[in-house]
Length: 178
Image 1: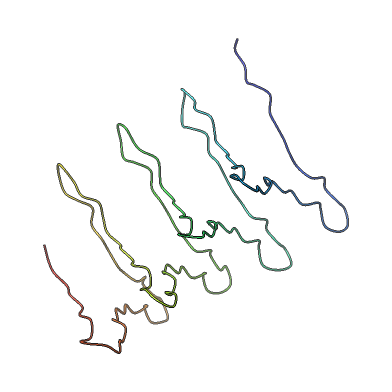
Image 2 (image 1 turned 120 degrees about the horizontal axis):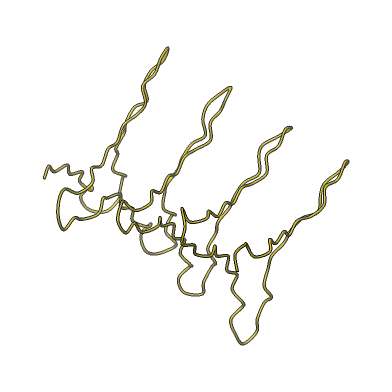
């Protein structure tokens, strides 16, 4: 039978004065078992582009916009991981992953910070790898580090620094061409 299934809308009401109600989705805590999972999935289709999933924090006309925070759970052994992956492309390229800071229409744009956490009382801080994938046929992707051009000011600098240590020989910096 042609047509669409029924829509579903879960929302709090509007208010002409004051805050609106909040919206909370949570599963209960468990004793002697696993807490229930929360799963949000867009269904598959067979015509056109797959439907999107959008998570957007609220705008504010008086102060800073709302934040979006994605945090994995703490663990008694290892902490949970956060994984962001684009979709597989069967006949053309796979999907892209874009991380961008917000535009400042009257001042600076927001910063983008990618870093590992500090180590605990023992061990090392987390490693960081920025690399392109391998290729079984053809060239691999390139890797470019560049700062933007400036009009009426200095272009941003690029700085690569090996941290200081207090045991043994200082760590090296190696640049090797293919």
